[in-house]
Amino acid sequence: MPVSADETVGSLAVRDTVLTPAGIEGLQESSSTQNVKARQVISRISREELEDRFLRLRDDHILLKQYANKQEEKIKRNEISRFRSEII
Image 1 (tube, rainbow, N blue to C red):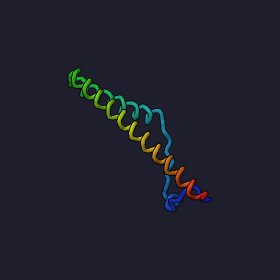
Image 2: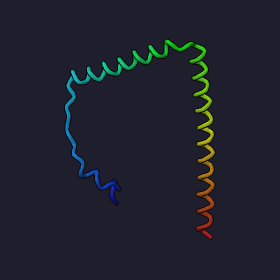
Image 3: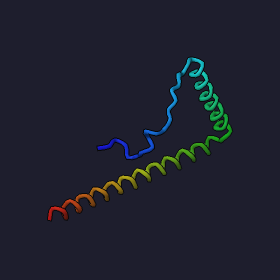
Image 4: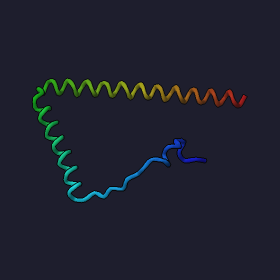
């Protein structure tokens, strides 16, 4: 059984790269720079606005989890009914 269904995987060129300590520091600087910029943006927003955004995101997250759970239950029910119909 083939591991990959994509035939182009074997034909892609791959370049080996060695990460030097200078390269690692460069990556860390860019992420810390991004962190500083993100903090600056957040510091410009009022606490009330941040709380509102957080609560909206939390509510959206809860709704998405509920929806995902309902979808999983539907999938389980469909699998059971399909399995039962195959047996009969």
